[in-house]
Image (spheres, rainbow, N blue to C red):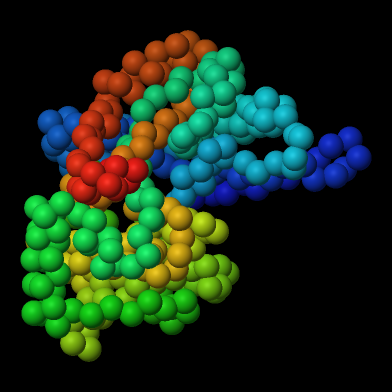
Length: 340
């Protein structure tokens, strides 16, 4: 991906036995990445003359494409506090050596209150990021999924599915797609350039190629065709009991029914694979909510290497960024309350 520079860290005990593995990286990031529309329009005008205004190189501890908490894996019985304290020293030293003033730890979901407290004790500020979306898969078939929806949402979905059927849109699930890396990356770039909620990493054909080759059958692509033309794709990761929808791409930036058809097909794929949970990712919340997705908050931790600035980091973040407040929708009939 664009200008990511990775550092992989293997932590050892006194006997040189591996006890934890993690990764951090440096990247140029827009410090106003979640800016409200009014501020974003001002920034666009300023950046016509100063392209890098409010863009800084910073260090992030975590993974760039999937959300996870904590940002490390550890052997049983290893204290998370010891790992965090060791990594904090390493991150601070690296940031200072590279002249970077900000460290970000991402992402905290679910039962991560204790971890957040550990970072707070080290001077980090825990703030809101864009929320994630999930769908718990409880249906044996896609027909039962549709039947569980309230009539308004089901009729809305079926109308858009019929539109795609009328345009002869079809799909294919594949494991090996490295030969399509250039095409898929170009499709992703079309969507990336049109994104108005979130723009960060920039994928490359090499990303698609190595994702397919290295992850094997766990990496999957849903390919969407109109007739014989490949018009879009969804990039998936089969991660144990979870299916993660990572990226979406298409040939042209058009406001039509394709995205809803893609999202429904991802749900259909999750049901067919027998996973327990489908992670549907950030942005395009409205369509995902109409399909029954649940919104779950994400937190990140911020810390400056500059003592004089660090107390004001959370205030500066709040001024420049405003993650959206998203309300749940009652999509399913009462007997499916567990997935509303």
